[in-house]
Amino acid sequence: MSGVFDKHYRKYDAWYDQHKFAFLSELEAVKKVLPRTGRGLEIGVGTGRFAASLGITMGIDPARQMLKIARKRGVNTRLGSGEELLFGDKTFDYVLIIITLCFVKNPKKVIAETSRILKKNGRIIIGIIDKESFLGKFYRKKKSAFYKGAKFFSVQEVTDLLKAGGFGRFSYYQTISIFPDIMKSVEQPKKGFSRGGFVVIAGRRTK
Image (cartoon, rainbow, N blue to C red; front, side, top):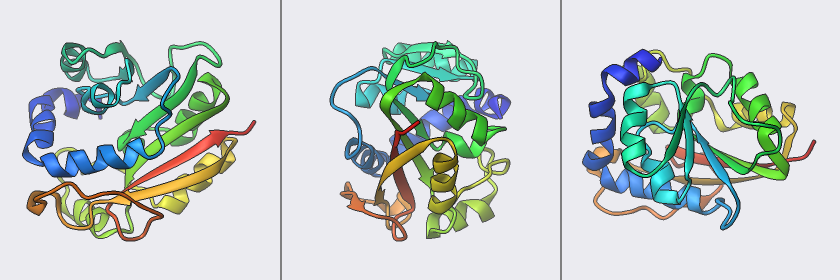
């Protein structure tokens, strides 16, 4: 998938400007579970939109062109994949994975690697387009350049992956109840899931 993102990196980055209110709404949902202190990493940092906006200074991604933009936004980047993280054990206090899970080859290994690099009680924060939501169903049919090779997840599927990977104490926030291209304001996140197209799932490393 990195080839797609390297080829269309400008189109990818422009989406966030063209759908400003959707992006800002997603940020608000992530902020609900983001630790105020500690060292964080974003897996699948892309062009650094989330990391730069949330004060996360470290990111990893397999797409070289995307990382060039992320660096310009002040993110310290590493070229690599979530399945083989280039960091030592218990290095980070929290890890952010936004949308990325649906593009990786081995989600279980990404979760395992995340657990390895997290400190005791470290937090994993995953943002997904819920495949059971109106937005997930739309993207699955649309087959865009980015999503045609994606494997969408439901909230329950991600939760099961996290439980199997040694995570617990979960919390959920949802946002984006209408299509991003018609949003006219920031939508404040709500607890839970089933109504929002974008869902944030947070858990603690328990093993």
